[in-house]
Every structure is written in C-alpha cells, then in structure tokens.
Image 1 (cartoon, rainbow, N blue to C red):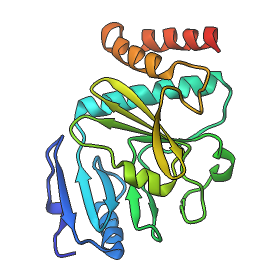
Image 2: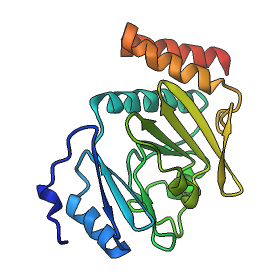
Image 3: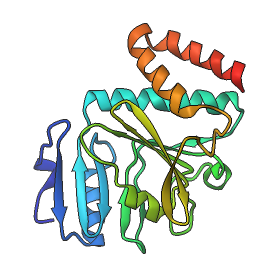
Image 4: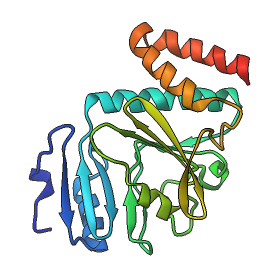
Length: 212
C-alpha cells in the first residue's frame, strides 16, 4: 500500500474514501486494517469507503439486534448472527460490512463455518444498517443478493425486500410477516432510553409471546 492505513485516524462519525482501488488492493486494505477494529468498510466500483461509527450508532445497532434476537428466540427459529462480518464477492467486485446480519433460513448451510465465500455460500438472510450520517450502500447488498435489508434513518425503520435483483420497500418483513415490525422495533428502541434496557427487553419479550 502507498498509504500506511494504520497511521490514519478517522474521527467518530467521519469517513474517508479511496478511489481507483482494485480487488487485490481492497484485500490488502482489509488485511492491514485487521479484524479487531471499529471501522466499517464498503467497496464497489473500485471505490472503498472507511467509516467510524458514533456511540449513538452503536447503541442503536446493539439494541435493535437484541430485539431481533428476542423475536427469533420466541419464534423458535435457529439463527446465526455474524455482526459486522466482511461479505465480499470477487467476481462481482463488491464488499460490505453490515452493522449486523443474520442467517435464518440458510442458517443450516453456514452453521459452524469459520469463513464464508459468497461465490459459493449464500448471503445472510437479513442485514441491518443504522444510517445516522452516511447512506447505506444499497447497490452492494443488491449485488450480493441479501434477501432483506433493514435501514434505520431518523428513527424510522425501512424494510427492503429483494425482488428481481432490486430492493422494493415493504410495510412488512418477509421473515416476520405476522408482526408489525415497522412499528414495534422503533417503539421499543425509543423505550430503552426512557425506562432502561432490562425492563424494556422483558416487556418486549412478553409482547412477542402474546402476539405470536
């Protein structure tokens, strides 16, 4: 690399973009940055974006992920959470690190795998992105074939379902079709900041049990 990335400091909530980066250089950047970091990476059209999230972003991500896990547990659906794993496909020249992601329908196909290759493995069934100061790279998720993408922006949840290779906004989740996801997830996310995490999670679990 011409630029020693381990000497670059990105303030929280900021991003840097490198253009005209080929695939081998993208792989080299991932190696140099390592896996133990707090940055997020997106790669498409020979351009790489490196972003450092704010504490508010991380709080929202963790809370929403915990709510999703409660639903999956109460529905007795096996799932494989992979957080901000780097998903990439060399043939498509695309790469992304979601805020969180879950294998649900395809959980059995990736269970126990230490490394995933999207040229042979399926993409996660659900990806989560918290948009505070940067926009989700929807085109990358479309190219990788992620069936369902949730985007949080300005406190609202947007559900995107993949149809014929393009996302279509939906009022309902394909995974949790019988639940008013767009209403209950933002509601309980806000409630955590008012009544506290533990109390809110217990109330949410009880609500899910009563409404399944």
